[in-house]
Image 1 (cartoon, rainbow, N blue to C red):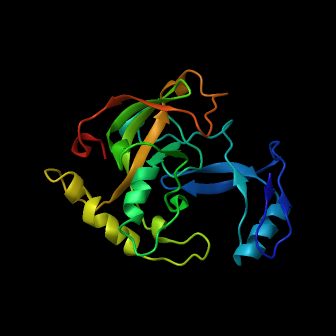
Image 2 (tube, helix red, strand yellow):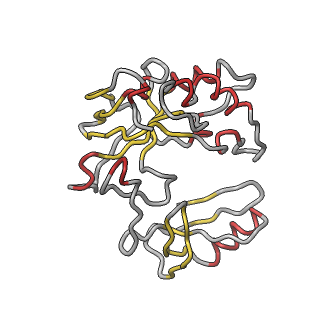
Length: 224
């Protein structure tokens, strides 16, 4: 793996497992140890970021980080936010950008499955889909923090994104009879249904068709 950044030499990272381990790694509620990619990588990131840092890799052989069992009991995630997959549609991005003074790229929302050809926010309703014969379960709408407001190129925050989402993607709007917690939603958190049986060697690629297998009738019925 080759990493590049402005004003920096290329950093080459071997894809074989490192030998060193670093303790005290945490993501949300989880903490544990991880493979350490070494001092050269640590120096590279520390110099570029202007603060001490290390590059680590999840050690699936010794560590387990479960997702919230309330939504997907038995499933696991590594260093992703909360779930292994986040699905978002281009239609939803277009709908949001039509309301913003300055359009934003999809990377603001850190989705790893982007679908096209559906109506905006159709993904709210999908509880099971198939991509390349693999079944994915939609477990909950993704509540958004402040990260989508931050420009990944400049690190400058523009709060108008979440303020706009509040006008039509808040729990108050989507679930008017439910408990209001001040959350806004964009995208659907997902897990691979058959991961517990055979989670290795599965590949999806750009252009694969997406088939909706099961869905609810409204966003008010979708888990949050």
